[in-house]
Length: 299
Image (cartoon, rainbow, N blue to C red; front, side):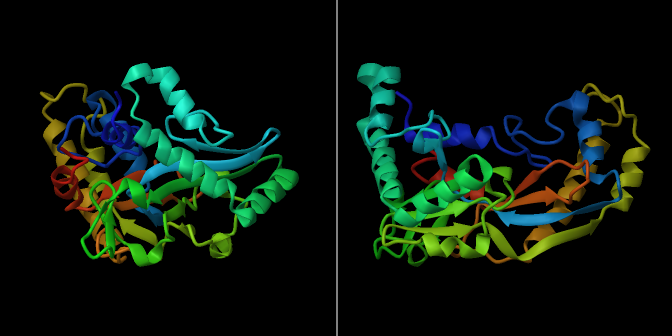
Protein backbone atom coordinates (compact mmCIF):
# COMPACT_ATOMS: atom_id res chain seq x y z
CA UNK A 1 0.00 0.00 0.00
CA UNK A 2 1.34 3.42 -0.91
CA UNK A 3 0.92 5.62 2.13
CA UNK A 4 0.32 9.36 1.90
CA UNK A 5 3.78 10.00 3.35
CA UNK A 6 5.40 8.08 0.49
CA UNK A 7 3.10 9.79 -2.02
CA UNK A 8 4.32 13.24 -1.00
CA UNK A 9 7.98 12.38 -0.53
CA UNK A 10 8.15 10.90 -4.03
CA UNK A 11 6.80 14.16 -5.42
CA UNK A 12 9.49 16.11 -3.56
CA UNK A 13 12.19 13.81 -4.92
CA UNK A 14 11.14 14.52 -8.47
CA UNK A 15 11.22 18.23 -7.84
CA UNK A 16 13.75 20.95 -8.46
CA UNK A 17 17.41 20.50 -7.53
CA UNK A 18 19.25 22.09 -4.64
CA UNK A 19 22.56 23.77 -5.40
CA UNK A 20 24.25 21.31 -3.05
CA UNK A 21 22.90 18.92 -0.43
CA UNK A 22 24.53 16.68 2.18
CA UNK A 23 22.06 13.89 1.44
CA UNK A 24 23.32 12.00 -1.66
CA UNK A 25 19.73 10.98 -2.47
CA UNK A 26 18.60 14.60 -2.72
CA UNK A 27 18.93 15.96 -6.26
CA UNK A 28 21.39 18.83 -6.55
CA UNK A 29 23.43 20.54 -9.24
CA UNK A 30 26.48 18.55 -8.14
CA UNK A 31 24.90 15.23 -7.13
CA UNK A 32 26.14 13.65 -10.38
CA UNK A 33 29.90 14.14 -10.31
CA UNK A 34 30.34 13.80 -14.07
CA UNK A 35 27.99 16.74 -14.79
CA UNK A 36 28.56 18.78 -11.63
CA UNK A 37 31.03 21.28 -13.08
CA UNK A 38 28.79 21.95 -16.08
CA UNK A 39 25.66 22.27 -13.93
CA UNK A 40 27.29 24.64 -11.48
CA UNK A 41 28.71 26.73 -14.31
CA UNK A 42 25.24 27.01 -15.84
CA UNK A 43 24.13 28.76 -12.65
CA UNK A 44 27.08 31.08 -12.08
CA UNK A 45 28.62 31.31 -15.56
CA UNK A 46 27.64 34.95 -16.06
CA UNK A 47 29.12 35.97 -12.73
CA UNK A 48 25.71 36.89 -11.35
CA UNK A 49 22.56 35.02 -10.34
CA UNK A 50 19.54 37.03 -11.43
CA UNK A 51 15.95 35.93 -11.25
CA UNK A 52 12.65 35.87 -9.44
CA UNK A 53 11.85 34.29 -6.10
CA UNK A 54 8.71 32.40 -5.17
CA UNK A 55 7.92 30.62 -1.93
CA UNK A 56 7.76 26.83 -1.88
CA UNK A 57 4.52 25.42 -0.56
CA UNK A 58 4.63 22.35 1.64
CA UNK A 59 1.43 20.71 0.47
CA UNK A 60 0.31 18.32 -2.27
CA UNK A 61 0.78 18.99 -5.99
CA UNK A 62 -2.58 19.46 -7.69
CA UNK A 63 -4.13 20.68 -10.94
CA UNK A 64 -7.61 21.57 -12.10
CA UNK A 65 -8.63 22.31 -15.65
CA UNK A 66 -11.23 22.32 -18.38
CA UNK A 67 -10.65 20.55 -21.70
CA UNK A 68 -12.81 19.15 -24.50
CA UNK A 69 -14.30 16.62 -22.06
CA UNK A 70 -15.12 19.16 -19.37
CA UNK A 71 -13.76 19.72 -15.88
CA UNK A 72 -11.02 17.57 -14.41
CA UNK A 73 -8.72 17.46 -11.42
CA UNK A 74 -5.39 15.69 -11.15
CA UNK A 75 -2.95 14.89 -8.38
CA UNK A 76 0.75 14.37 -9.04
CA UNK A 77 0.21 10.59 -9.34
CA UNK A 78 -3.14 10.41 -11.12
CA UNK A 79 -4.66 10.77 -14.54
CA UNK A 80 -7.33 13.38 -15.15
CA UNK A 81 -10.26 12.63 -12.86
CA UNK A 82 -13.73 13.67 -14.02
CA UNK A 83 -16.17 12.57 -11.33
CA UNK A 84 -16.36 12.26 -7.59
CA UNK A 85 -15.30 8.71 -6.79
CA UNK A 86 -12.79 8.41 -9.64
CA UNK A 87 -9.80 8.60 -7.30
CA UNK A 88 -11.06 5.67 -5.25
CA UNK A 89 -11.84 3.64 -8.38
CA UNK A 90 -8.34 4.25 -9.72
CA UNK A 91 -6.74 3.35 -6.37
CA UNK A 92 -8.73 0.11 -6.12
CA UNK A 93 -7.68 -0.84 -9.63
CA UNK A 94 -4.03 -0.19 -8.84
CA UNK A 95 -3.70 -1.41 -5.26
CA UNK A 96 -6.66 -3.83 -5.02
CA UNK A 97 -7.16 -5.04 -1.41
CA UNK A 98 -4.24 -2.95 -0.16
CA UNK A 99 -5.93 0.33 -1.06
CA UNK A 100 -6.32 2.97 1.66
CA UNK A 101 -9.75 4.54 0.99
CA UNK A 102 -9.00 7.46 3.31
CA UNK A 103 -6.41 8.93 0.95
CA UNK A 104 -8.56 8.50 -2.15
CA UNK A 105 -11.54 9.83 -0.24
CA UNK A 106 -9.71 13.07 0.48
CA UNK A 107 -9.00 13.64 -3.19
CA UNK A 108 -12.53 12.72 -4.21
CA UNK A 109 -13.96 15.25 -1.73
CA UNK A 110 -11.52 17.86 -2.94
CA UNK A 111 -12.55 17.20 -6.55
CA UNK A 112 -16.20 17.67 -5.62
CA UNK A 113 -15.50 20.91 -3.73
CA UNK A 114 -13.57 22.44 -6.62
CA UNK A 115 -16.12 21.23 -9.16
CA UNK A 116 -18.81 22.98 -7.14
CA UNK A 117 -16.99 26.33 -7.24
CA UNK A 118 -18.90 28.17 -9.96
CA UNK A 119 -16.41 31.04 -10.23
CA UNK A 120 -13.56 28.59 -10.75
CA UNK A 121 -15.54 26.68 -13.37
CA UNK A 122 -16.32 29.88 -15.25
CA UNK A 123 -12.68 30.97 -15.21
CA UNK A 124 -11.45 27.62 -16.55
CA UNK A 125 -14.10 27.56 -19.27
CA UNK A 126 -13.24 31.11 -20.33
CA UNK A 127 -9.55 30.17 -20.52
CA UNK A 128 -10.48 27.12 -22.57
CA UNK A 129 -12.41 29.25 -25.06
CA UNK A 130 -9.61 31.82 -25.38
CA UNK A 131 -6.53 29.62 -25.33
CA UNK A 132 -7.68 26.10 -26.19
CA UNK A 133 -7.35 24.81 -22.65
CA UNK A 134 -7.93 26.06 -19.14
CA UNK A 135 -5.59 25.04 -16.34
CA UNK A 136 -4.70 26.07 -12.82
CA UNK A 137 -1.69 24.31 -11.36
CA UNK A 138 -0.01 24.44 -7.97
CA UNK A 139 -0.38 22.81 -4.58
CA UNK A 140 -3.21 22.14 -2.20
CA UNK A 141 -3.19 22.85 1.51
CA UNK A 142 -6.03 20.44 2.31
CA UNK A 143 -6.69 20.72 6.03
CA UNK A 144 -8.10 17.19 6.55
CA UNK A 145 -4.73 15.81 5.39
CA UNK A 146 -2.73 17.80 7.93
CA UNK A 147 -1.95 17.70 11.64
CA UNK A 148 -3.70 20.47 13.55
CA UNK A 149 -2.52 22.33 16.63
CA UNK A 150 -4.72 22.01 19.71
CA UNK A 151 -6.10 25.51 19.27
CA UNK A 152 -6.78 24.91 15.57
CA UNK A 153 -4.82 27.98 14.52
CA UNK A 154 -2.06 26.04 12.75
CA UNK A 155 -1.86 22.99 10.51
CA UNK A 156 1.22 21.01 9.44
CA UNK A 157 1.28 18.97 6.23
CA UNK A 158 4.85 17.67 6.05
CA UNK A 159 7.22 19.83 8.05
CA UNK A 160 5.84 23.37 7.96
CA UNK A 161 3.25 25.00 10.21
CA UNK A 162 0.75 27.19 8.39
CA UNK A 163 -1.75 29.58 9.92
CA UNK A 164 -5.30 28.45 9.23
CA UNK A 165 -6.60 32.04 9.13
CA UNK A 166 -5.28 32.17 5.54
CA UNK A 167 -7.43 29.21 4.55
CA UNK A 168 -11.03 28.35 3.88
CA UNK A 169 -12.87 25.71 5.88
CA UNK A 170 -11.01 22.90 4.11
CA UNK A 171 -7.87 24.62 2.84
CA UNK A 172 -6.12 26.68 0.16
CA UNK A 173 -5.05 26.28 -3.45
CA UNK A 174 -1.58 27.78 -3.91
CA UNK A 175 -1.06 28.73 -7.57
CA UNK A 176 2.54 28.57 -8.81
CA UNK A 177 2.89 31.89 -10.58
CA UNK A 178 5.84 31.00 -12.83
CA UNK A 179 4.49 27.79 -14.32
CA UNK A 180 3.62 28.08 -18.03
CA UNK A 181 0.25 26.45 -17.36
CA UNK A 182 -0.70 29.51 -15.29
CA UNK A 183 0.56 32.20 -17.66
CA UNK A 184 -2.90 33.44 -18.64
CA UNK A 185 -4.11 33.94 -15.06
CA UNK A 186 -3.92 37.17 -13.09
CA UNK A 187 -2.26 36.34 -9.78
CA UNK A 188 -3.76 39.45 -8.17
CA UNK A 189 -7.29 38.34 -9.08
CA UNK A 190 -7.13 34.83 -7.64
CA UNK A 191 -8.95 35.86 -4.48
CA UNK A 192 -12.05 36.37 -6.62
CA UNK A 193 -12.29 32.56 -6.75
CA UNK A 194 -12.48 32.18 -2.97
CA UNK A 195 -15.46 30.48 -1.41
CA UNK A 196 -16.08 29.27 2.13
CA UNK A 197 -14.21 26.02 1.43
CA UNK A 198 -11.04 27.00 -0.47
CA UNK A 199 -9.01 30.20 -0.71
CA UNK A 200 -6.89 30.78 -3.81
CA UNK A 201 -3.44 32.30 -3.35
CA UNK A 202 -0.14 32.61 -5.22
CA UNK A 203 3.49 31.97 -4.32
CA UNK A 204 4.87 35.44 -5.14
CA UNK A 205 6.84 37.10 -2.35
CA UNK A 206 7.46 40.59 -0.99
CA UNK A 207 11.05 40.86 -2.31
CA UNK A 208 10.57 39.11 -5.67
CA UNK A 209 13.97 39.50 -7.34
CA UNK A 210 17.58 38.63 -6.66
CA UNK A 211 20.79 39.88 -8.25
CA UNK A 212 23.73 38.13 -6.58
CA UNK A 213 27.39 38.73 -7.38
CA UNK A 214 29.07 35.33 -7.79
CA UNK A 215 31.99 36.52 -9.89
CA UNK A 216 34.54 35.31 -7.31
CA UNK A 217 33.00 31.85 -7.31
CA UNK A 218 32.94 31.88 -11.12
CA UNK A 219 36.67 32.71 -11.24
CA UNK A 220 37.43 29.91 -8.79
CA UNK A 221 35.39 27.44 -10.83
CA UNK A 222 37.17 28.48 -14.03
CA UNK A 223 40.47 27.38 -12.48
CA UNK A 224 39.20 23.84 -11.98
CA UNK A 225 39.21 21.05 -14.48
CA UNK A 226 35.82 20.67 -16.21
CA UNK A 227 36.49 16.93 -16.47
CA UNK A 228 35.80 15.97 -12.86
CA UNK A 229 34.23 12.53 -13.11
CA UNK A 230 35.11 11.01 -9.72
CA UNK A 231 35.08 12.26 -6.16
CA UNK A 232 38.75 11.29 -5.91
CA UNK A 233 39.62 13.99 -8.43
CA UNK A 234 41.94 16.58 -6.87
CA UNK A 235 39.53 19.42 -7.76
CA UNK A 236 36.34 17.77 -6.49
CA UNK A 237 36.42 19.10 -2.93
CA UNK A 238 37.08 22.64 -4.12
CA UNK A 239 34.12 22.40 -6.50
CA UNK A 240 31.89 21.33 -3.61
CA UNK A 241 33.15 24.25 -1.53
CA UNK A 242 32.35 26.67 -4.35
CA UNK A 243 28.83 25.24 -4.58
CA UNK A 244 28.35 25.67 -0.83
CA UNK A 245 29.60 29.26 -0.98
CA UNK A 246 27.16 30.01 -3.79
CA UNK A 247 24.33 28.43 -1.85
CA UNK A 248 25.15 30.52 1.22
CA UNK A 249 24.84 33.70 -0.86
CA UNK A 250 21.52 32.57 -2.31
CA UNK A 251 20.16 31.68 1.13
CA UNK A 252 21.16 35.10 2.43
CA UNK A 253 19.32 36.75 -0.48
CA UNK A 254 16.05 34.83 -0.22
CA UNK A 255 15.84 35.19 3.56
CA UNK A 256 14.97 38.85 3.10
CA UNK A 257 11.44 37.52 2.65
CA UNK A 258 9.22 36.57 5.57
CA UNK A 259 7.13 33.37 5.35
CA UNK A 260 3.85 34.08 3.59
CA UNK A 261 1.48 31.71 5.32
CA UNK A 262 2.74 31.47 8.91
CA UNK A 263 5.90 31.64 10.98
CA UNK A 264 7.63 28.86 9.02
CA UNK A 265 8.45 28.14 5.39
CA UNK A 266 9.66 25.13 3.44
CA UNK A 267 11.91 27.39 1.39
CA UNK A 268 12.05 29.24 -1.91
CA UNK A 269 12.40 28.66 -5.65
CA UNK A 270 14.75 30.70 -7.83
CA UNK A 271 13.47 31.29 -11.37
CA UNK A 272 16.26 32.57 -13.67
CA UNK A 273 15.61 35.67 -15.72
CA UNK A 274 14.33 35.20 -19.25
CA UNK A 275 17.13 34.40 -21.66
CA UNK A 276 19.36 32.94 -18.98
CA UNK A 277 20.70 29.40 -19.26
CA UNK A 278 20.66 29.03 -15.50
CA UNK A 279 18.44 26.26 -14.07
CA UNK A 280 15.58 26.70 -11.65
CA UNK A 281 16.73 25.73 -8.17
CA UNK A 282 15.19 25.37 -4.75
CA UNK A 283 16.55 26.67 -1.47
CA UNK A 284 15.16 24.80 1.51
CA UNK A 285 14.79 26.50 4.88
CA UNK A 286 17.56 25.26 7.16
CA UNK A 287 15.06 24.05 9.76
CA UNK A 288 12.71 22.29 7.36
CA UNK A 289 14.46 18.91 7.23
CA UNK A 290 14.54 18.53 11.02
CA UNK A 291 10.91 19.60 11.25
CA UNK A 292 9.90 17.12 8.55
CA UNK A 293 11.82 14.27 10.20
CA UNK A 294 10.10 14.93 13.51
CA UNK A 295 6.64 15.05 11.96
CA UNK A 296 4.42 12.00 11.39
CA UNK A 297 5.18 12.20 7.63
CA UNK A 298 8.91 12.05 8.19
CA UNK A 299 8.87 8.96 10.37
